[in-house]
Length: 168
Image (cartoon, rainbow, N blue to C red):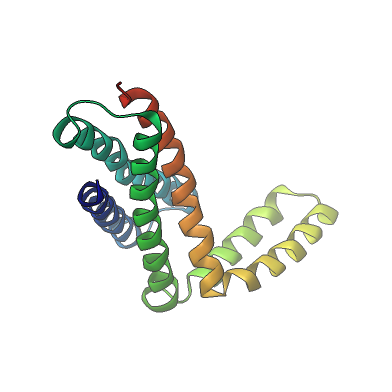
């Protein structure tokens, strides 16, 4: 079980790293909403290894049988590996590869709110965004948020995969 978790966790981690880097650098001229869609799609594609890891364990190592609990455990652990590596990659990206990202994203968000919100609401949202900007400048906070985002999606995929693949 351990080898399957590590193997498919690494596959997921490598996939999310490659897709993210490709999206960050090849999609430099795309708008933020398109980049966000690409980012979530990259997460789902990389977390598809949860399904394949559970299926591999069931069919190749466990005689075609797997309980829901064991399948969920395998999926969650594969998701943890993928989430941890993505959290680290995100810190490397915002700290070293694109240190101006947070400022660019903040300015984009301000401009977007300015054109869509009434003045009073705009000012309240700007104050809220200022507080969030300080939090996101902390690498540990960025790691936690991005890692948890991948993990939550991975947990959902693990849950669905465990339901689909369980066999007694």
